[in-house]
Length: 413
Image 1: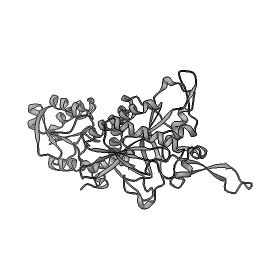
Image 2: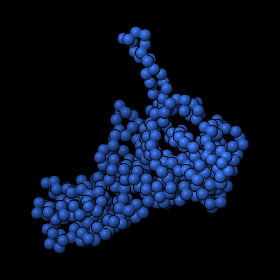
Image 3: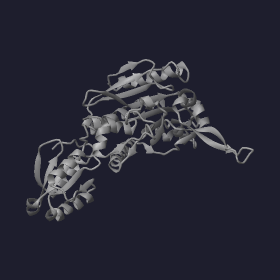
Image 4: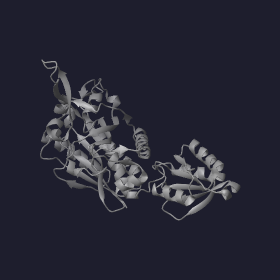
């Protein structure tokens, strides 16, 4: 079984409802998984010089019109009505105006943050990122579990910098991609440069500059890539990252876009060394894309056997009988203090039934505690997906878990 919806049911992660198509209902275990990924990405972005921001989920129509999204993506946006005032007859319905739209991406919001005060060249490159709640009105026939949603969270990042700084930002992006993808167990990915679409914003001159800069930067960094005509964003060319999963499928997830056009449309500027106004380049990037889609891909890639660091419950303590509960509780408390996501299963069940239920939930590690383990002050450690068992001390388990709960550590018995 590899369908992420079936895996999510067995692991009690999330489900979908007919009355909210394309939107995820997260269960406690699923939200732990979501947060473990979000927190890891927050650390990666912060280590690479990004500052986290948060912007409104609904933005005024005038902003979307200025950015060009209203014209290009209006049919895919959720328009929100606002009450303009009361009709002449007080019993009549209020007058509603379609003044707002739920954001399908965070670009205009981050532009607004950049424009909130005068900027200096000393702030370059200015790196902003947001776990942005996005809404896109996808057709009902295209919805497919987590793989295509109407509501999702995106690791949405934007960089404002000089043209001379772009290659370094691309290098940083590709280093982040390699680090992040490896932590999730992906070792193969490919690059595609997507060029100007037929319907686009801005002049050919700006597109020539942006495409040349992107291609030359990727070449200078020594990466192989493919070119794709007419597949760029409407405001700039894209560097797209596609990973390969364990089933041999390709998934486009990461993206990096060079944008000369929106800075011109919004008249962005910073004060340079000479005290003059200079226009920045705007770079758009995401490493995971939709976090929900990433989780769906991840579940299918690992068939639910997630890396220990990402698993919602990393280890379960299963005492064989009431006599072993005190030692099991001691192990539980010690691991809890260590910051491990641990569960203690003290239900009145046979140990074989506990193991079956915990295995169905794809909990990576199970520590079995019997009377022999009490005498030796040890535990019997089982690894999900293997037949291996180890009798180890609590100190040894703690030492091992410190490594396993670190994202850079790979799972191996």
